[in-house]
Amino acid sequence: MAAQLATTFTGLRFENPFLLASAPPTESDNNILRAFDAGWGGVVTKTIGLHPVVNVAGPKTRFLRATPDATQLSMQKRPGTALHSSWNWELISDKALDWWVPRIARIKKAHPARILVASIMAGSGTDDELRHWQTLAKACQDEGADALELNLSCPHMDRKDMGSNIGKDQGLISIVTQAVAEIARVPIWAKLTPSTTDIVLEAGGAFLGGAAAVSSSNTFPSLPLIDPATLEFEMNVDGLVSSGGLGGPAILPLSMAKMAQLTQAFPDKAFSGIGGVAEFAHALNYFVLGCGTVQVCTAAMLDHAIGPNVIAQLLQGMRDTMDRHGWSSLDDFRGIRRDRVVTHSKIRRPDTKAYHGGYEEAEGYAASER
Ligand SMILES: Cc1cc2nc3c(=O)[nH]c(=O)nc-3n(C[C@H](O)[C@H](O)[C@H](O)COP(=O)(O)O)c2cc1C
Image (cartoon, rainbow, N blue to C red; front, side, top):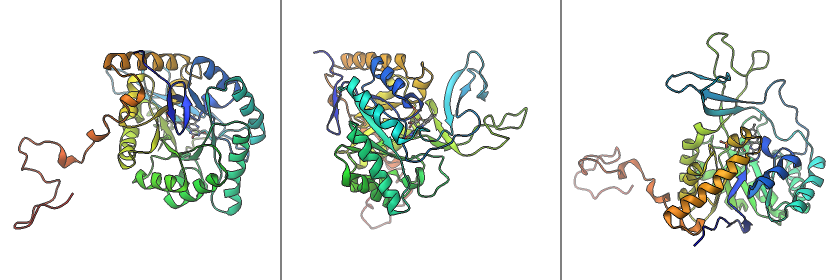
């Protein structure tokens, strides 16, 4: 039987489970229309806020590259290097809600069968701020957005009640999600930050508030490297730098670890995997851990800004892999490796009695519960 790429996620039918993540590839209607023409099953818009933002006076994103057979890591463009990661300190969309509203309608009209997710962000410190979330959500869904992704994970916020600062507080996550759920007629996805000790708690807050899915990961808080010759950060403005976000190949294993925690804790919930995906072999990691869709940013930025070759490879790679394993749909392999991630003491030792996970068995008592 021919491999079926179509899938249903949070009640929405996707022609294929691949989306462009909220980022420069989805910063305009032009880009999004090109992305749908290229074959992406869905897109998440660049995050839309109520207030205009102003970005730094310099590049917003650069790419860290490694030199094969050497140890050099640098953002300097040079031949024969391999991509290590992206680093950015770009804020949310610099276009206001008014700019987005007619465009959301136009994109949906041109591509009614593709999934358009509106990413939105506001503060959380006051009732007014919570109403901002509702204003954004209502405007986007009224124009035809199929789902809302709450940006609870932007790593560049000074404000304590915004972005990843919300994403570190399970109570605030619940409150914001619930405020949106009060008015939402479309599914809510909560995009969480990986910069937290126990992402399972934050995901619990999102589901409690009414989220239909959790998206993970946003970029990892990080700094650019220092150039040993100039002693300047490789990205800076007037010599100054601020915490930004790491994406791309370097974060795939990190993001997988977060996802494994999430899908084990909530095996019946929906998850969208993000981080370091450039080809189907990468996306497969998220699917077999239990994700129902996968999102891509860095790889698409480096491929004609919207990833026409990336999506072509993802689709072909998925078909080839499904044929090889005799799978007919994503349901045949979603989550099949979720239970392989276990506590360290469950990994076999040469002598099975030798290790008890760091606990000593007390003489005369039954083995402790772990
Ligand atoms: C330049 C840039 C801008 C981004 N802007 C947003 C944003 O506005 N909203 C958001 O939720 N995530 C944003 N992200 C994060 C991406 O959506 C994605 O979560 C992250 O880059 C990891 O995926 P990747 O490894 O495929 O790049 C941005 C990432 C980059 C590189």
